Image (cartoon, rainbow, N blue to C red; front, side, top):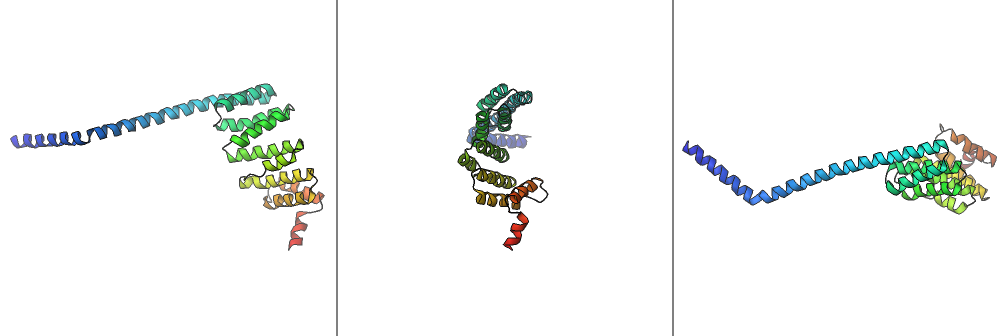
Length: 220
C-alpha cells in the first residue's frame, strides 16, 4: 500500500512539474483555439444573416422588375450594392436592374448597372454577360470605342464566340466590314455546331458574301 502511495505521489509530482512548465502555454493554446472557433461560428452566423438580408432585397428587386417599376428596382439595387456588394445577389441584381431600366427606356441607368457588375463582379460568367450586354447598349448609343473596350477583357471560353460576334456587330456599325467578317468567322469557328445561334452568325457572314464553308474551302 505504501509503495502504491509513493508511486501515486511521484506521478502527482510529475504532473505538477509538467503543468508548471507547460501550463501557461497549454492554457493560451486552448484560449486561442476557443476564440478561433467562436470567431468562425460568429462569422458564419454573420454571413448567414447577411445572405438572408441580401436575398430579401434581391426578391424585392425581382418583384419590382416583374411589375415594371424601374424606380423601385433602382432603389433595391442601390440598397444591395451599398450594403451587400460582395454577394452573388448583388451581381445577379445588377443584371436584373439593367433589364428593368432598359425596359423603362432608361439606357444610362441600365449601362450604369452593367458597368457596376463589370467593375465589381467576382463571378466570371456574370461579368461576361454584363460585358456583352453593356457592349450592345454602348453600340446602340454609337459609343463604339467603349463598346469594343468592354469586349477586350478575357472571358470564360464559352463566352468568347459571343464576344467575337458582338465585336463583329460593333465593327459593322462602324463601317469596318472586313474586320467584322474576321470577327464573325472567329465566332462561327469557335461555336459548337449544335449551338443554334451559330446559324445566325452564319447568316451574317452569308449576307456579307463570306459563307463560312466557302471561306474554309478557300483556305484549304
